[in-house]
Length: 465
Image 1 (spheres, one colour):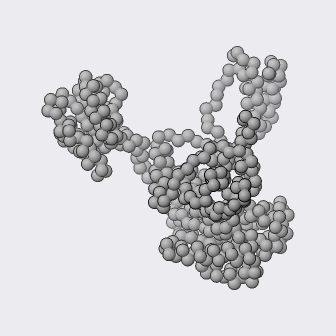
Image 2: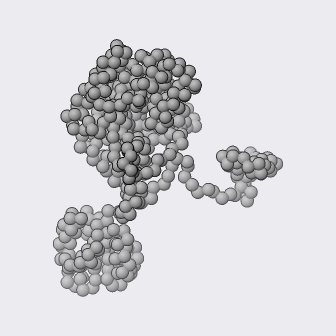
Image 3: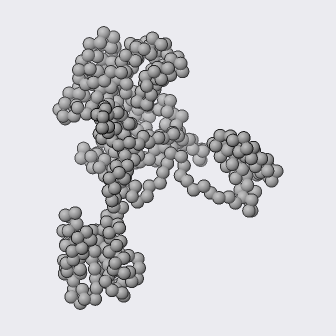
């Protein structure tokens, strides 16, 4: 418990830091400590203004943003279902030991939780390791699943902004990488750490990656230079054939297996007619330790400029690969279950779509309401509620304004503002005649529809939108 003397001493620490123009992060840390000490004292001293912000690396999603997200999710889920996928879910946190030792150098990015009831827990870092645990625990050896859920990483995320044109796929194989490292003179004990360096080639030039390999990770300059000759190669079947004839790689068992499978993959890609969108790239490494075979990433290209310069990569939006040994790590008998998967970067795709829509000024609907039930005169609230109840019972997506006697103009304006396509208007004359006036918001066309035919007419008109 803080006493007043300690609070005064901490306040002096903060004052000196500000006076000496210390780093903002350091000042913020000490200010937070001071506020906590004041809060412990209680009374007015402990009261302070909260800073209303989301934690670093997170954001809120309002109705407009969520509408865009749902559009992205719908496209992805539709694709998964078209290929016969089932859906699963797993807890947001796992036993710490489940996640430990699966991510190589990225393990430092795992969020650990405080001890809860004798179990050491961590927030999930990806959906792959929990999936492998799920397979081993339930003794499943055959499933085609998709899983959409949040993961958590102690990272410093950055979103590259720009205009985007298309995706292309980069593929490689962990066995080709390991074979390449072996023939280049990388010691076995350094394979994973050098692989982690190669994985940075999409963000750093080769010179910086080489410097890290040699200066920080102790690789010989000669070995680094030999790696450099390979990792700058990319192509298709021709490159695979070239490497199969490479005097060094062709003598390495792992590399030869990987190249054989890569050749088979490109033969299948030819059947699907998509070889033009796929590049065999020896610089693709993917830093996670659990990959055992083919690895791939979907990379986004930035729009060419007016000078016709070549498109440049602005980042990965999906990635994955084969991980045949991961399930066996959790199986008591060590049984291997071959697995292959892909993870789609929803946040990056969402940001790209959001930018595009802002640039196009397209109006985003945040609801799916088909019709607004409106009244033309006062004292018709009960009639509006009766009609909307009929529409809801028939499965029509309908709204009504939460006012007793809203003006008709305000009701029509609400439809224009929110993109509701139809208005069902009840008035004294319509009630006498047993009809409802149906108005098309965009054209302002109005037609009288028999009440018993209203549901069918709404369905017909909305199906054409």
